[in-house]
Length: 613
Image (cartoon, one colour):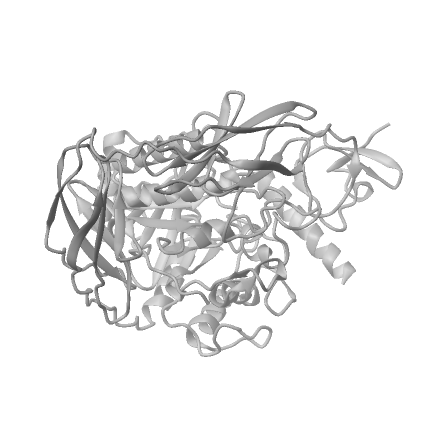
């Protein structure tokens, strides 16, 4: 696990993984857009410790030059898990020294990225307030220290899926929806061509989604596969995904066999799932589409101290030979391609510090391997500039534009509308620019980008003046949401749906208020979580249109279910301290937080469960 700082924690993870392996043995293409990745086509990413956990502290300027990307780990929450505010203070550095070292690495052609989360930095963006706090604080950190991008390393209970949130393409769980919105907002602020967005989830949150999906399976951990909607919704701006192929239990691959970490077989099977795509929870109506090969890295521990599942250099190169050169393993044949992917991006390690501790075996060995592979010739031909930019409508606070599509040898993936220091992204040949000032003149230009990240020249500038504030303002509110119904409820959550409102210019979203809290959604269904058991709530729902008009409210009163007593123990359930379960006529109390697995029945694991008198 990235960020493992406590030796006892590492030992416990290894014990649990060993127990899982033993129990198993005994029991047994949608096309995507591209982000800006302009670093070496054969990339080595390393995490740099902003703390000292016994691996040794390294100044940034002393990092091995074999690394292309340095992930500074970690920025963490400052005000609890759910506030959303993120902070970062350089360890063993003054601010000036740290900024100078970041600039030094960038001057060497390296990219320095801030990583958020890790083992101890859980983040839950359960509200729009938390989302906005996250966007504001992360943006400030990146600007303050001059980072090149953001790495999302949410672990533990940061991400989960509410019951019934079964379609990864249309998530409804607030912590998922708000994270997606936050990442896109941060990316839009910095601009796709100058900003790197990467992710480092555990296998539990990605590949396990082939077998179980937390929003749709019964009695399984609600976190299973919870990264999939985030990856899917940001795949057009995601530079690369580096799943942690370590500290993992056995995972079922596309051959429907369990694969165990620490060998080439595991890495090939895990990468193949991302290169092929897979049905989420084996539901053929919910296919998670393949990522591009250049969007994928293998995540590896630098040595045995860094995490469970250390893989020898020989085994890593066997895996890379299969993935990149098509030299297939006898134990696993890739479904995505048996001829290999020459543009597979590379490897990531936890961590730079542990690599130095291990005499640079990781960086030296894998740099030599990757350098021996001739990278593909990059596409450098930009699209043609958009033409015929015209105004289709104006209001006092918005302007709508359209233009003729650009052309490109590999395909246009989007457009950027720029005005002053601001910009708006569009995937089509039109865009609405909102939040403008009434009676003000703006100059707009449009540029195109292609599937390799090349940017066209800007279009001819177009000057537009917004309407006066008292002219042409839409004042007609949407109709009130109707037929509000309870879809489901539990002791801590309520799911509502309603009939869509109508409006002359279009409804843009709904606000659900209850007490002093509120959430905002884009669809006509929402799950409100973190409620109190056996409590009456009145939920009011209003619709909002593109001009900011708000409808009259619709309301419904709902009483949450009473808290149930001890539930029957079940595998694949996340338990916390003091949870009570029943098993074989006895009641047990949870002693340590964990996710249950077959073979870990309460009588079998007294370290996890205490028999209640």
